[in-house]
Image (cartoon, rainbow, N blue to C red; front, side, top):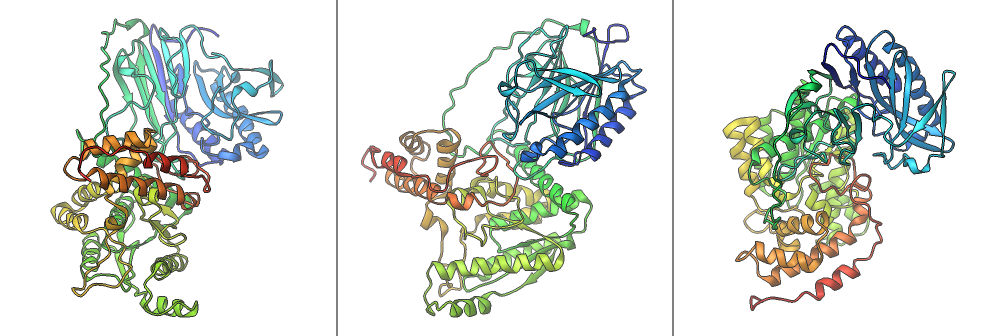
Length: 607
């Protein structure tokens, strides 16, 4: 490899995050061609694209389709001549098939040809094979050339290194470090660097390039992070969570490296906190990020399905109210009219006047289309058809209502060519607090990554962000209302007698358990001890223990619902998606964990 072509001592860099259609190689190749054409007069030394940009990084098992592999290779050959007569080295990714195995590959185009091919050691997709399966001295025949497939530091040329994923740099003194890392857009409780190193603390030139939001949003929304750093200073950065092509450029002087100050790393004692999902330092920054990720996920789904209408059930509760706000933000970003957001109230025997009033007030303020379809008569006929005793208010009585509402939404979606937006939150998903094939199901669930404690706070912020003081006031009223599915008949005052937290236990405890037991993998006795310490005076140790038992029992027994989860975006480091988050068989036993809970020693006398 020759030294980088430069003007004087400068190094010209361009980073491109193209618009991508998953598995549409022709479209993706055209986007890359357009980007290269726009950069031709600038003569960058490096043009860097995301990993697997020719196919999209989220193809899954489609990577193993020979048709896709062949199309990607042909596109690579078509792109190579575009580098002829230019100093540019173009770096891009595609799947590479060798025998029965398919690997994630990187190609370096230069001088009008494919100069180097690399096989990634540990690919992002489980459908792709790690490089350890690559036969020794493997070669790939391309356009009459036989190119070796390299695996170990093939791009460590002179002082340039390619970094893939989260591993730390192998050559810290590299003049140019290119980090190709597909980052999902997340909004963690506290600021955390999603890469394995901090470019602000590194001497030399660092490039970061990630797949963007136009990738599949089945379970994650990719950030589209693109940055160029030198000596701790960001020279260029692209806006994240956009669907249009992003191109950033910078002219660097490799000889201008300075001695960076040594940063003292202070490891704070990570003590458990009451609300681990909420950013205590900059909550509004986290809330803004969450709303943008949710809306970006829904935007991509609407663009992909060519739909301009959504439909959702609104009850006056927090979950459906926040989902409505996400729809409003999505339509605003897409330039669509909010009248094509169909908010459907479906009152049943347990629907209170106050909840219906809250739902109507928010929908009025949002300017969406409203419709009321009572479900009482249909549910009565159905229960009579299956021989359910009149007046028996059991789980069948409750679930029949949830499934009737889902049937209405799905059939209206067919009628209106609309997409059914789900409303269930992460806490309900963890506990299985939904009716299987009822409110459990939707066409895209925007709230699946939000735990209840965070959703309640986000709801109030989003109401104010979208609709000012009036929106914040209505959202606050919704957030403060008792949490209830409203499936049992009303009491004598016309209000619901059904309180979710009286059955499950407090959501703030369940969210605490979800974070520390699942995300932090703490043992039951550790989780219990920390919960007692974090909620003194709020709950006795006995109350914490009862709720902890409920958490473990339901978390295991309700996995079958999670195994059939609809698509929706991950928002925090915890995901319960069966595809890209929590993978557990539906018949896994909870005995070991429940036995550990039974052995917990109860402190003090607060029993």
